[in-house]
Image (tube, rainbow, N blue to C red; front, side, top):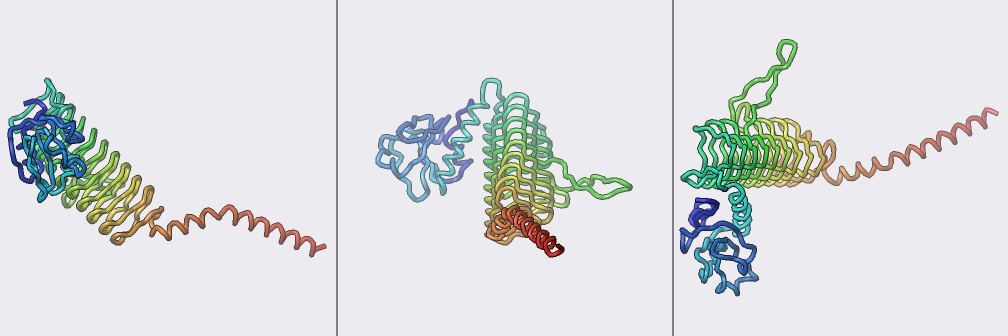
Length: 340
């Protein structure tokens, strides 16, 4: 089967409507219709519509409701968001080309594993998933179709991952819950009962850790992007379309509503609720709830305008100290003069 996949697989993975040759093998992506060949997928852009009659792509992606005729393309896939679909195709096909070499293992459903992977016989692997060398998939794992797991990714037991997800190199999904309670003179680690669930189209960066839940599953909503070296503690719940830039950490039971953005090296305290569409600027520490659509920054985080005023005031401290020292010196001189 190699690294090529039939056009019909893209309909399975992306949805939409497929017309034309469903068996056409696709092995790569073309940036423009002019460079497309029968083995490549490409996108219909507005500037190239006049060249449709010269398109020789194996698969042409168009917006649903705006379907042109296939002209020279072997097949045509109509989807709601063609730009996003094409971007996924480009990343996915590159990964498949890198992994599906002669020493790879390819299953009947098209899933492909590089050498050195440890995969439990009780793991359920979705069709056309690509697993880079050295990855580990434990028992009772469910991986959706079209996922990409990069080198040495670890998917622990009972984790559920949706379709078209991308797990970065060295990431750990489903590490043991780190819930601690005081014991007899020391702290003891208490095991949890939850796991981890990822929605469709979730991207997890390299070396990121997502803990299993203590009382319930740790959840990451569809379309969310988590950067590298991030940490998501147990029982956190992220909505759809969230963004966490690298080296951000969530303590336990944090709730992010849909489309929240945390902009790098942000720390969020346990139990905090960040409302819909809120933006937390880089380097902030969040210790209390954040209202929907608020923009906060600082340590502790506060509304942007308030934080900027505080920063400006802090920048005046040195000049104020100098002025106070000058006034104190003047008062001393006056006191000495009065004493004489």
